Amino acid sequence: MQPCRKTCSIYMALFALVRRTKCPHAGLIHCRDNAWVSGMADLTFDQLFVVLSATRPSFAEAEQMRQWLAGIDQGAQCLALIEETARGRPCPRCGCGRVHRCGQASGLQRFRCLGCRRSYNALTGTPLARLRKREHWLAYFQCALDSLVVRAAAAKIGVHRTTSFRWRHRFIPAAARNRPTVLGDIVEADETYLLESQKGSRQMTRPARRRGGVSHQRGINGEYDCLLVARDRGGRTLAFHTGRGPVTAALLGACLSPVLLPGAVLYSDGAAAYQRFASLHGITHAWVNVRAGEHARGNIHIQNVNAWHARLKGWLAHFRGVASRYLAHYANWYRLLDERHLGTPTALLVAAARRY
Ligand SMILES: [Zn+2]
Image 1: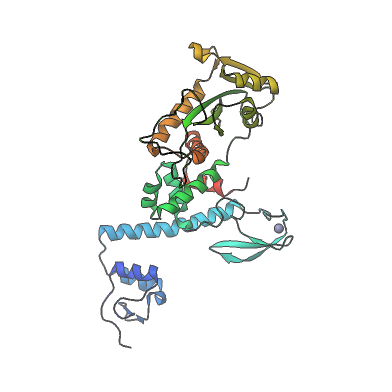
Image 2 (image 1 turned 90 degrees about the vertical axis):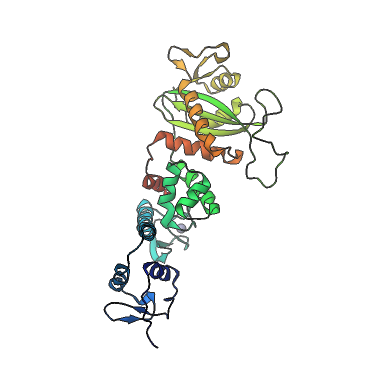
């Protein structure tokens, strides 16, 4: 076979390497040291470097190469973080600690459980299991920290918008499992209401509203989603999507009683549901009569939680409406941003890959 006398440009060299096609001229590549190879896969790194340094990449080509190298680096970093997070973890199915190594798959170590004989890896049993393109995960978590909308994140990372959407609703709830299990001694609780939304739904249960629309009835009714927020004076916050319509004592009991410490004091507005919930569960309760214009009575107020509501709604505005079924995801996403203790992509990834 006669060698090809042309030299691949940097772009074609990278394209050939990534797509695993052959040299566009003759399937052969000419290197300066006069070594002829039958395809990019046979190139050593030194030979590849010679090919690359023989060309003068444009700014766009250099940027493309930078992104490609960053992807390689981030993929390895992501895998290392996932493996480190799961180190020493027992079998996710039976809890057996007797395991042995069983090869690798998609860059992650596989283990074979000696109890149930099933195999697993560091992500089995977490919301991140079976998701692909791990080289982009850290960059995607940065998009989450930047509050990018689905399409902007997809364009920035270079994945399809469907992937971007799927990742959002897997990554955010996964990281949001990192939440306070109990709140402090003084807890403010209040609910905020958002008009229900069937954004993205293929089978709507009502005619579409135009330009956002309004409720057909006055006051809080079944057309509104209720988001209950409890925040202690240390800034720890929990948000619960309780469903449609006004909050009830039973819903407050289901959401708040597991997170209130014995002896904790609950502050709220004067809604009867809070008084009933507090008396049923023996919780010390004080309220401000917001309807009568009372905003604070000494230390008793719900201004921290109301300020949180206002910040959340301001942040939600740039998504131009969120579907009711994802409201809890968005509330938790905002909670993570507002708390700031998971303020880096690596911290978010570790929180999401952990088993709780
Ligand atoms: Zn097992």
